[in-house]
Length: 332
Image (cartoon, rainbow, N blue to C red):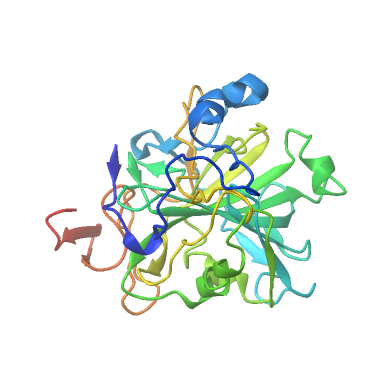
């Protein structure tokens, strides 16, 4: 498995406290959802779907992807100016999640989907990886998921999540570069207010569309599941080919898995390992190997999945018969 080199900007500055007797008045820490005796290897003991044949995330192997030219660009509507007041950002002990209003909808899918929430998965200091999905064995420092339900067919998310076509999730792979991403500051700057599980903070409305990559017409599509229990196998996944980028100064750090009255345990490595594809097909909305140009000054995009990371030090050269990619960095 290939990984991007460890990214200090995404990794917590906190060190897990070694086991010791709890001081009087402190509660035991929450067990880890992702490792240990209650971790992902044991989820299927209590949640049978977690051992199913259509689980997520996956390692997207581009040599096996099928191009489907009929797949349209993703069309978020209501993302730029949410009308339902402030967002709520919550530390639920396993991730940080922000509620989204149903006025934010998604078109370009088989049905219309309404937003529910977004949340993050990330790694830990000194360790490569953190994203849930991989591309050709390559993991990224973090991943953003934006969860939607099928509002065309079902009245609410509680009803939709019980149905085979109930959910759709956008997956945005995140990497670290030199340029700050102001949209992510709306969330990351408030993590200090939700250090402990159960804490939440209000966030004024902002342009959620800016959290997305610029090229919404290039993505991978497959049928899968939720990546945490109950692992329901009713998710239509859209994983964007272009990554979002934040700077090393923008951190997913300083949050804890336990409550304020528990033994401090940093909230890190909250990602599930890639699952077997089994007999599923993965489709792409673009011909694999096609390249697309940078979307803003100083930013670039990968010329082909698995061929490198976005932005400098990649250099693009347009050829008569397509695009070639020259790597200036020998480590790529």
